[in-house]
Length: 328
Image (cartoon, rainbow, N blue to C red; front, side, top):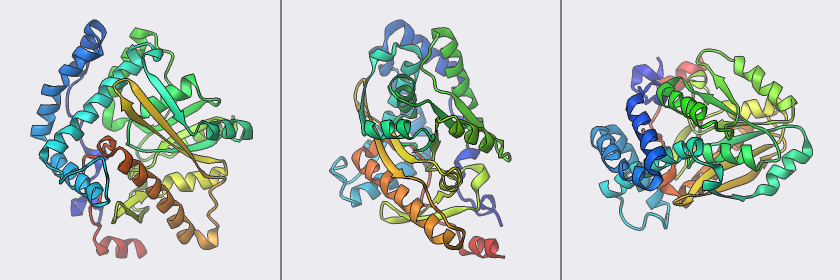
């Protein structure tokens, strides 16, 4: 039995919604009339996706209800579809800012690094590092920090197969604008582990490799770890922590949270140095590290609940039959 057979949501199987033409039109408006006018175009665009994405609306509402139940001050009342639309709109703003990171001058954005001493620490160690990120806030804001202000080179490990259109737009935008703010990308391909060698080479050079660790990627199905996340059992991938343990380098967490119309706070925290998962105590230690990551992510979700962009049933239950099948 596989997750597909039981209907478990698999984000990586989702087709891109939207078109290359639409992204190019948005980029054209951004260049011609600026960010403020381009932002007005988000209302009909976001409205379309909001109205046509029933599963996403439901997932967003359930997530907001969870953070509300955890006492999140940023959701001061019972979540409704109005809050769900704001959640969608916040995602649209993040995409628009992503255009800005590629098209505008870097100084157009105000970046505040909170915990910059941890980046300095990694640089002083000289052993490279693994950065655990998430789909909270803007990963591109983190990349901009890496290109402009970080004392170490940062590469990003990404599955790009599920977002070929939007990544093609940003590649072209970089060529048009002559942007030098991009950070190197290590592309992970479904069914292949060749990226592991590229990651090790980057670490050996003293660079940092950022990994989005809050989604179960295609190569990791069947190796998830169940943890408590926002008060309910959820499954997170074990791969990023296993990779960090194999590399034996420092591990930090980073998240770029939008704090104002053109400002981002980059939150950096020390996670481990290094991640230690002894063979004889592997299940317990791996569970511990994934739970620590889940707690760190939950803290950020409560800080900026509308900026966590996983519009699917993150808490989907995996039947016991699958666990029994894995044990055979």
